[in-house]
Length: 294
Image (cartoon, rainbow, N blue to C red; front, top):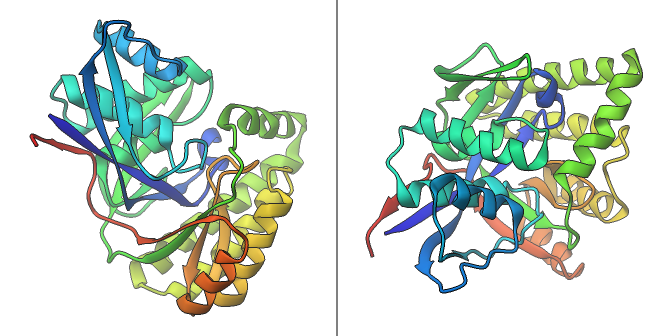
């Protein structure tokens, strides 16, 4: 049995979602194939893989992952793999999978939100703590609750650029947390990001890609205040704004990936290739994680 687990992007609201503000995420048409194969040693070097196998009571197996998306790219790699391992061994409802995968990821990192695991399980556009859409489920952790809903809309073209350096979710979330705990300044930024997300949902539902791009630019500018952007991210964002409707980092930052809503895709791709970075010309997808025999 092979599990196909989709990577995800956060269009609006990363970091703010950790504190209960709205965020909009979506699965993209970049899938990892995940197998569990027999292994005498069962050696795994990644803590979240070890924890997932221990949770399932598995030993002497090796987790094989086939994907062209680099780890640490900000596209939910750990959630992709955790969810894939769980699905390989058990049958879950989407809600059960989102909960179990998040619990394992949280126990490994010690912080974060269930936005990645829910998006991968549900598929399509997923709104966290918003007012629109079709209700999915609720997850609570340490006094914070996240309410999820599905946003019915058409898929959207995206260009995703891996910066070439890994971003540590744990490090970047911890960095932002220090800002947040110092006072009202960071909290005001989070509130603004929440407002941008709400506007972005409306633009997505209308299919207004120009407005989506404009709001992505605003969201990125707010996130920069926390020091989670890099010179490489800024270079890519600048190109994305020149040849696209808008661009921003996606995920925790400090490296990872940039998402761009393309306008002149040919010129955009040409300019990006000069940077010697990994570029994915893709789109959002309505598909969530699934498994099938091969």
